[in-house]
Length: 472
Image 1 (spheres, rainbow, N blue to C red):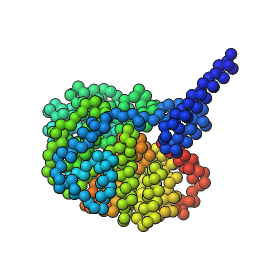
Image 2: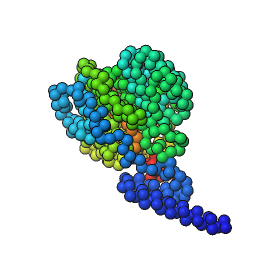
Image 3: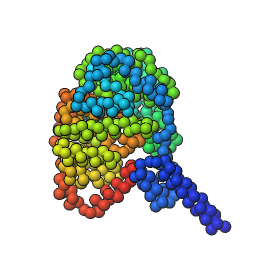
Image 4: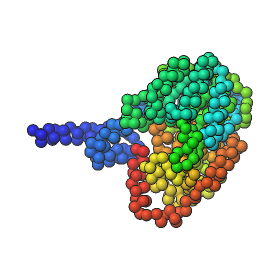
């Protein structure tokens, strides 16, 4: 009897796995991802099927907001632009600007100032000052918001501002902030603050939705001041990990560029609350605070294009002098990887900076499998030594700065909801380059001949883990 039940169970399992494989093939995914999932299902019986149920299902075709509503929110800043601003294109990056405008409806917004923060303390000091000065509304969106010292300080400040009559809306990612108990949010809700969790799940660390997270970091104060970059809300962004400092980059934007961040937030707000907000008061007329031209691009698994990835691609194609990249995780889509190699081959000074030690061992191993080919092509690769390099900063040709939430990896470009500021300004780019060069002083350049002397087993381990990069 036991033998018969075992055979029946085995047959049901095989039929189920075969059905899943047929579904995966039918979805026309990236062939590399398709093959990887088939390998997992075939060579990891039962375990592979469980992994697929939790992490492999494709939700990218589920539309969460109509095209009409998306367009209505996304193009709202255009109502505040005059004709002269609409045609104020920097010629060097005209193709990139057109790409982001056509694919992402991202208007080119003139008249912003940009301030960099390279420490968590400086960022939160400035953020708290701006929140203290808020009079109308505060919109906040973070992947991680911990129930720790800085997290509670921000919570208490927002409760105070809500009591003063400021309208506050908050979005947190249910997986990124899964350790936080609901009581933390309830304190804010009881104070009149609207708090929504993005894609709330029962088992946040074991769910198919773990692949489609809201990784954005956005704050908008009164529609005039905005923040974006790599920093979430947690003590570690100030005190660092146990093995060193936490090096990150964030920017404060004041002026019309904030309207792009506002649009992204309001689209996400509709996704989590089903409340459509397009009122003019959230896009107030603004004076010029500087000469930065800004496009705020967003991307995620629910859009047909990979807008931020396409923006990076075009920016790399346009580069003539240098490309400096800081990223905590380097697992690039093949097209971007080859674009960097092509740029270096044609004489562009391409530099990549990653942490010596990562907070995720598998990603660290997979990342290192790419370095040999990069260095053979002339790309300079650096290990940041003092701690964890979490900065997501790219600077190109003293003319373009890319800063936002997107890592240089497949997960950011193809799976997560991300936001990226494309800033066209020489002074801002030079400041970004200075930040990179200063960090380079605390970094070690990898030498190709020394890199190739590493044990064969280490190089094989990195190459083996790379096989699973579509799943990382």
